[in-house]
Amino acid sequence: MTAVPVAPPHPDVRWYAITHITDYHYSGPVTSSYGRGHLFPRTTATQRCLDATVTVAPTPTDASSGVDVQGNETVFFHVTTPHEHLRVTARSLVAVTAPDPALRATGAAAAPWEQSRPGGRPDAALDVEFALDLDPPEITADVREYAAVSFRPGRPLAEAVFDLQHRIHEDFTYLSGSTTTTTTVAHVMATRTGVCQDFARVAAACLRSQGLAARYVSGYLSTTPPPGKERLVGVDASHAWVSVRSADGRWFDVDPTNDQWCDDRYVTVARGRDYDDVPPLRGIIYTDSARSRIHVSVDVAPVTPPVR
Image (tube, rainbow, N blue to C red; front, top):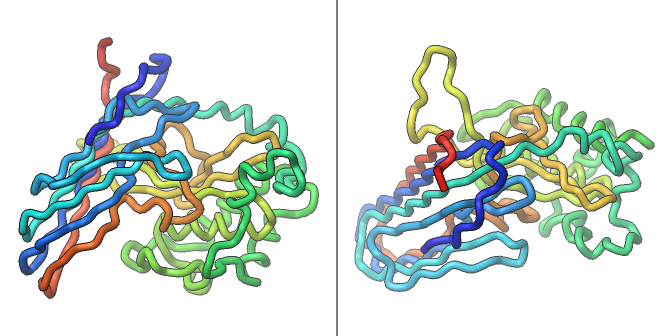
């Protein structure tokens, strides 16, 4: 399964070679395994996916790729060879340009945030679904109250959004293993603990509670080893952040886990209303196996631009 390469962008960008390996181990044979995933990085105004492949072992009987309703490329596979170990390997080459920070000080980003509510704007259909609550609902009284502190009347959109994500970063504790993909926003609000996907979902719920359009974004973040230490391979991870739409149609990505606007260290894979729209992998297996375990290895390696 291979994404179609596109023309390379301007050379003044950061290049990354990304390897995302997912291993499933089962205590007994699996006779049939269906899988679907979001593993191909997107091509956007600030990002180009030059090449991307996904391989599955054992070799699938059927495999294909497509595009979902949000424009994310998806992969599908069906393995019918009996197996106790399944490996899915995604490799991609991506070039990323940092968004112009000046955009956050102009236009709708610098105007009162209330103007960026979809409301009755002619283009509201483009983003109104991202301003709606989920089912089951995530916008509670606690969420509204928490968000209202940042979204004071008349405050510039970019300023309010950054304040919200900064408060989440300060008020919530990152604790690996404290939540699962089914943990609710209400639970995270009550415990004040979670991981990147939880903080992105809290931020999205807060933004929507104010009538703004917000997207959940999944992807990768390039990390730098401590001074004097070698870069370790395979210890990176999938990441998640949130994006908010301004009245002039621009989307601004912000990362409450790391307390910053997203720049050219961020690689976008998929966008949706919630994690459930864009999981890296999801599937169904047929087996009598009583136990299973999963191991994920991600490597986001800065590379020299290839010669073309």
